[in-house]
Image 1 (tube, rainbow, N blue to C red):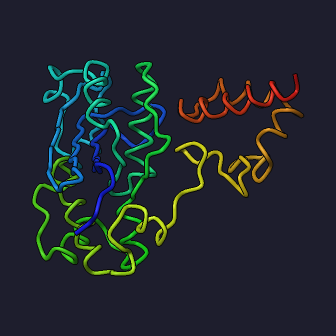
Image 2: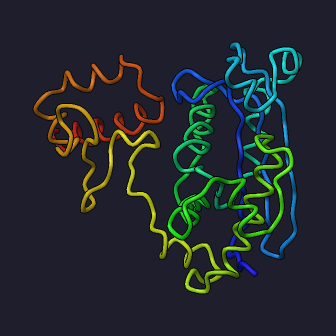
Amino acid sequence: MLQLSKPLAIIDLETTGINLSTDRIVEIAIVKIGTDGSKLVKRKLLNPEIPISVVSSDLHGITNEMVKDAPTFKQVANEIKQFLENCDLAGYNSNRFDIPMLAEEFLRVGLDFDFKGRRLVDVQKVFHLMEQRTLSAAYKFYCNKTLEGAHGAEADATATWEVLEAQVVKYPQLGNTVESILKVIGEDNTVDFARRMVLENGVEVFNFGKHKGRAVADVLKAEPQYYDWMMKGDFPMHTKQKLTEIFNRTLLKKG
């Protein structure tokens, strides 16, 4: 069994699309596992306040009609934040999508959800490191079950937890703690969830464009208009938040 030093919240989102800047959450499910093995589930349909694309509706089965009377993210944000209090976070492809999308939603409504001190366990990384398959295939492979209701947020989050438990049993080298798993699969050295900036030897560097590989602080000192360009551009709010933190820190050093 996985030994938890703090609660682990497995998150799965269904959304209007996959663009972190412009798309919104239409369903959120959180399976919270306590340090004593207890399980709490929170699931909500949300009104995204923008149309759900046909492609997305075809994938997860949630239509505009189904969510027209649902609460908005703003209306449930505090409830979700409290539910995630003192939790490490997990999911399937969550480091690249679910957690960045959730961070964007919190920022849009003015809540600065603190990710510092939280361990982020992406079950897909374990699977891809060991087997390289999809969630449905992972569920079949590790749990010998067919994933009913795939692309429903609660079904996917619950399946992800079962897969993680089975992975701990199957791969003893993972250990049975969040910390030991992350030692094997590694932690992302990202500054922002969209990966526009990454850490290299403890220094924030750009991970895209003409300044790729250059220290962010050096670029902002030499070319402060680049900060203005990014802040006006179509970048996720979390990217802009982290860029502003570095920019302000750079100004203080100059002062």
